[in-house]
Image (cartoon, rainbow, N blue to C red; front, side):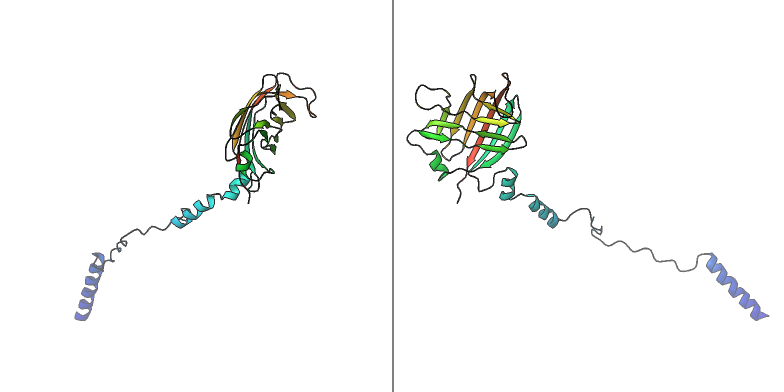
Length: 220
C-alpha cells in the first residue's frame, strides 16, 4: 500500500513539472553572421561584365568608316546637305586618280581642279558631279564663275536627287574652299532645276541650296 502511495505521488510530481513548463527550453536562434550576406542579384552585372560590355560598345575605326560609307580605300570622304525644294543629306566615299592629298591641293600655275564627287549617296541617292575650279592656283577660297570673257568658266555642281537635276542658273552662286591637306567645303545657293532624262519639264520656281564638306586621305 505504501508503495502504491509513493508511486502515485511520484507521478503527480512529474505531471506538475511538465504542466508548469519544467521541460528544458529550446535554444534561442543563432545570430546572423556579421558582414554582407545578401545573395548577388543575377540581373546586376559585376564590374568585369560591365567593363566587357563597354569595350564591346566601342566601334572600331573600320566599323565607323563603314557606317559613314567611306572605307579606307576611298580617296575622298564627302558629306552633303540639300535644302529648299528638296531636303536631303548624304555621305559617302569616292576614289580619285591623284598621287597624294597634298599634291592635289598644292599651289602652282593655274590649272583645272576637279572637286570630289558624290555617287548615289544616302537614302535619296544623291549624285554630285562636274564641279571644278578652272584656274586653281593653290589652297584658298574661290567664287565660281559660270560665264567669263576670258579663259574657261568654272563648273557649278550638277546635282541629281529624287529623279530631278539641279545646276547653276541666273541667281546661282557658289564658293569653294580648298585646304592644303586636300580637305575643303562647297557652298552653293539658288541652284535651279534643269531638264533631265527623268524630268523633261523642270519647275522654273524650284531652288535648292547645297553644302558639301570633304576630307582627303592618302592611300598606301
